[in-house]
Image (cartoon, rainbow, N blue to C red; front, side, top):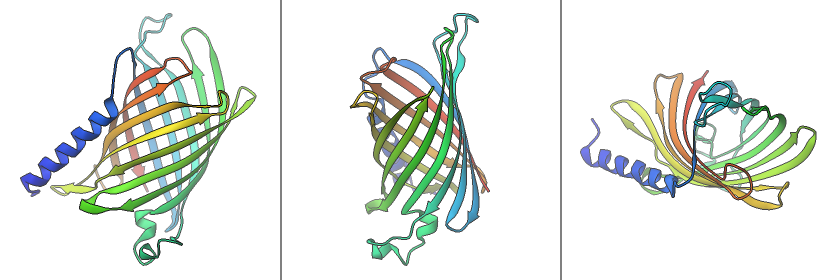
Length: 241
């Protein structure tokens, strides 16, 4: 059994993370973001990551009179755990399993189908470098640098994304639970500015040794694109093999 004090701290952690993620919610569009992630281990240091996601806007479809899925993404990636070079104190730890530093390279196909007939497709190359550093009280600081090389209907552009946050893994009656919160800013070369911010908080819950589920709330602000504010509830189903 988990002591009541630890449960209270965990609940306070999640509430704080959700408060940070929610922010001001006036004049925002509500969306649902379902996603499926598949992770397939190739060797102890390498795995394949498959992604399938969609966006469901709450605004009704003018033709059908109901909400519909408008955006879809399919992706394939290769994840590689990198051995610590400067952090020598981590070299003797299980740096592969804990993924203190790892790289992701991949390709995403993005399709957009709006109710008014507008549609586009995007070919997106992805390069990421992520890190995780345990600190005090079981907390771990997380960080990610990401480059999206984008071809949107034949027009090339880049998007640079910087993310920082924290998580806190623990176990509740034998179930793995990891609440987290992070914030990300993005620079879009189409507009030459840091136009997008996303604040996200959620929890990853282990269902079986192979399956996990991750509900989360995200708040996204964009100074250029429409809608300029989005409140999204996301639900990710993850499979590990």
